[in-house]
Image (tube, rainbow, N blue to C red; front, side, top):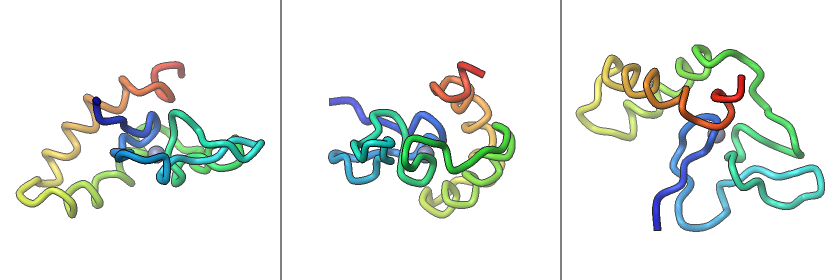
Length: 88
Ligand SMILES: [Zn+2]
């Protein structure tokens, strides 16, 4: 099975739906994590560049050897392909 990523911030979602956000009716979102999406709405309303800025520190922290520049390059290439940003 392929790894799924949040379609807003690119966080890996793991094997269960525990990291997924919720829809208005309380069901789990199929696309977005609980940090980005709650009760049927995005919790983050900034631009894609602001999202990238927020994502860089945890990426560097979670990937030993990755520099800020590496993380920035990856996010600049990857985030625009995600559902949330593609539609904008
Ligand atoms: Zn997310």
